[in-house]
Amino acid sequence: QVQLVQSGAEVKKPGASVKVSCKASGYTFSNYLIIWVRQAPGQGLEWMGGISENSGSTNSAQKFQGRVTMSTDTSTSTAYMELRSLRSDDTATYYCGRMDYYMDVWGKGTTVTVSS
Amino acid sequence: SSELTQPPSVSVSPGQTARIACSGDSLPNQSTFWYQQKPGQAPVVVIYKDTERPSGIPERFSASSSGTTVTLTIRGVQAEDEADYYCQSIDSSGAWVFGGGTKLTVL
Image (cartoon, rainbow over all chains, first blue to last red; front, side):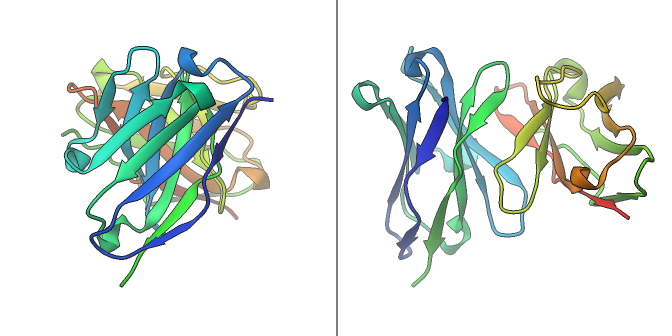
């Protein structure tokens, strides 16, 4: 079945980087965008950006530009989101999702905790 | 960037109609999406492209728009509809924007 499986929870210190993976299965990976959304504890949804494996193009939210890198590995049908220079307010659950006409498939989320 | 404004909370009794508004200057020009999120779960799209309902989403979910406000309507609310609801659109730069979310409580 179509699914996105995300990597496990991470605990990082301020200033470090985190790389979250999102492995797709059950569909042709290159045919869909992958979108990244995060949610801080008790807060709302926040769009981080998206990537098209087909075209290689990315689009990220202005607040993350310079600090986020989205990439894909076609050979493993995996998308990655790397966030650098982590701060305590980056503590959140990070979701990947497949974008067709809408985000129809979501990963279960990866919790990233930033703490000294 | 554009902002989308939602009421923090809406409460209805079972069987009644819930209406959740989302206001923003960009809304007349871009498609709107609505997400339902239950505690500990990933969001689920209940409305896309303004008024379309994904397969598997009950017919009691619908959406409409008027000017700079879009409204998610849930008719015949059921206990299982209790969740957080988020509107989302895209601004002129192509950036996605989410509303702050509305907690729907079924009394």
